[in-house]
Structure formats: C-alpha cells, structure tokens
Length: 116
Image 1 (tube, rainbow, N blue to C red):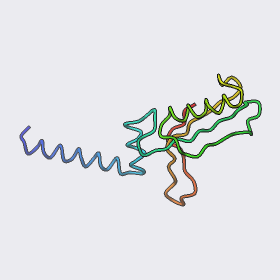
Image 2: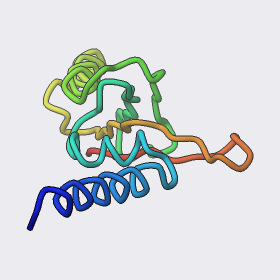
Image 3: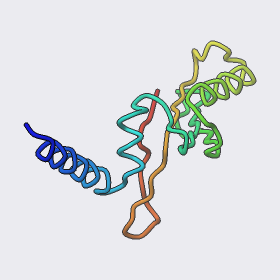
Image 4: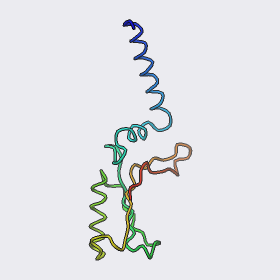
C-alpha cells in the first residue's frame, strides 16, 4: 500500500466515523463509547429513590445535579439513612444518567443509562 492509498483510507475512515457520530445525537453516541457505565463529563445524574417498596407510589426524584454515579449513590444512601434504612433494606433506588430530549418536539426524551 503506497502513501497515497493510505491517506485515502485514513480520510475515508475519518469520514465514516464522523458520519456515524453525527447521526442522531452525537453526544450520546460518544458517551456510550467512552463512558458506558457512568456519566460523561457533560451529563448529569438524577436520583430516583423509593423509601419503601411496599409503597411504590411514594418516590423521591432529585434534580439532575450529580456529576457521576458515585455522587448519586451517596445521596441516596444519605436519604435512606434519614429514613431509618441505612442499609437500604426497605427501599430501592435508581440513578438515571444523561437525559436526552427528543429533537422533534423537545417535550419528551429518554435517559441514556439507568443504574439500579
């Protein structure tokens, strides 16, 4: 393979990568690639805490203020301790990472990752 063919292959590969990343929501695709189990630096995490699983309609949802999964889990454990359940035996929680709004109307959307 000569230098000219190598340059063309690298250029074609770069164009293909840009096309894949720019399809849909590029921030989400990049976050999925490099941070599959935690929040990307631009994402925020929302804590969803149910203090008592026998009362599933009573749910505490935080604002999206946490920078990573550890901060979300720490917050939930703090709330559980305040509820008298420091080992989270009666309750449960989820940390919702990276909310991405629908581009069509902006009212709906989904979280990139939900960790239980």
